[in-house]
Image (cartoon, rainbow, N blue to C red; front, side):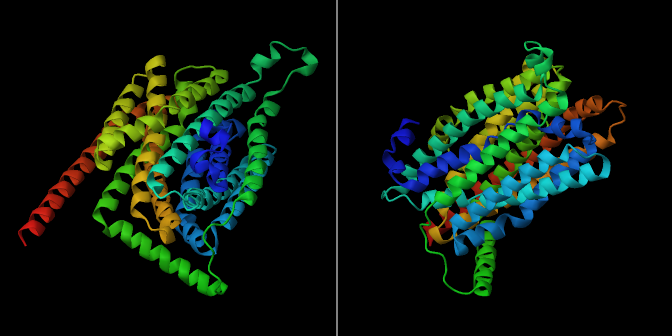
Length: 443
């Protein structure tokens, strides 16, 4: 972290410095510790909230690769400015949504989730690519590890602040217990405060995006030619990712682990309610997760140096399965520990898969390949959360929390089957690779 503050090493370049700040402010959002109950407390049902998650994932899926290709052709700085501006509009819309109810509330939240997905799709890959290409060191892979580790650590620090503030701002009970009645906050007002905080972050992100420097000169051809070039690059990169077996197997493992961990991330506040925890401590748990995430980059880097990328993903899968089992009894401390493991897994998977893809991508297609990763991750998340929502809906318990608790038990079995299938695929891939090596050595 001191390297970033001092502007040393790879941070002598402007873009890597700005990337760290942009990444921290863009991703560390104060409403995350209360994400699920933020929408349900507005008046939405659990089923409607799960529909919003599917729309969010579908929006990213629709725009992920085209935005990456446009970043590689039109310019990454322009796409990042668009992403930050969309984030500002998204948060303004969410702030306005609480004034409505019924159908209008659902429609406004639906538009908010669509815009959120569009913003995420535009930012995904473009921020990393504009920072990576600015590095002038000869050994870019080593320099990029330093940038990525610093980015993840500063993001953890930002999460520490955002999670703590989000939980405290959302629950006014602790504040009202200490102040005179004239200064007390209503629940309706307090529930808007985390949104206001993220809106301010979005404005800062827009300022940072404007200050990025375009490293690769965008194409000077006409608009239609750029669109055709972006389409061609999209199709070629997606084909490479699918047909290159090593990349496909790594992406498949990342998709599986990211889907289960991210689905849990959106439902953490429901788990906390299942564990009968007070709302003000939701953010403190999120802050504890942020502290633990401080060590994830170094741990992930060490594991990836010790094992292959696929071996690192299989290790992550074992941790995910263990955490899902720990959630089932709904014991307070065991449940909180399980949530922390799954949240740490998100950073671990992103580091592992991103590190591998950077080593495989050329500069002309880097943002596009990272966007293919993002598209795959969100396709997996959308499918997984859709299946989980159907599972919850199929439960016959009368109370929503009881249905959610029952679904957690069945989730263990479903993930175990999927993980065993992925393990078999990795074994087949390794066997095929060994046969290819043997065959080439005999020719």
